[in-house]
Image (cartoon, rainbow, N blue to C red; front, top):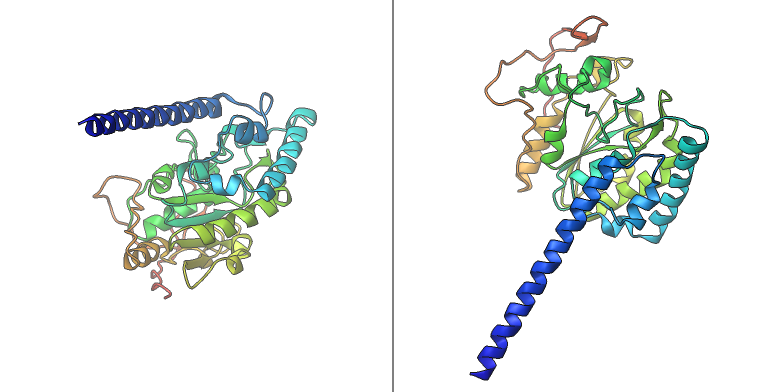
Length: 311
């Protein structure tokens, strides 16, 4: 009888302690969420957010706690602090959104990676997610984003070419990762070298520590990381850059999204819902779109056939 009573007491204590631990984790997460919303480059550094306040992306602690990554972050943090506080440069995105791609998709949830180059350079347009805009921004202002949405429409998915919010894709396990997580406003590529080693380490870690996933590489900069991806484990889809400066035939009608879902389904990882609008919706013919500077920012080009999945 005494043994039963003692066991019951221990069970209650452990259960209560576990509840306290969960409450503490939830409280810390809420505190970090609030901090990331209010922090600025003038009040905080990346090192402080990650390591002083311990606001590392959940699930990625094994990466961010590595000694080499901490050293990289110290260099990156000091340079961004200098750029913002001494040179008074504007930095994109807001400091709380620098690691937003990691915050939204843990290694366990990750099913696909889309690599961009660096954040939108215009003041206030970067969101921390590659190719994703704030709801207040029309994609015609960032034509690379608009072309990504139009390619999803080519694949038969329900999208709005005037809405560049791709948060739903991140919620489906798509890591929308730029290879440079910051830049000086209006200076494309200004922080590419600064983030180069970190990005390589992050891609290596993602390659090794996630389940079989799809990697979508657009443009030469993203394709440069192809050699770092284990092709026996992951599936690589490649195309031209969605920038209107590049010939659309190298980007459009490549069927990236359907091929990604088909491969993931075969691997037992489930299909990604690439629709950004509720079903059903009007279907459009697949086209090579052209950039124009009037509303809506694009015009129909030649019809094109969607590619067969290359595997």
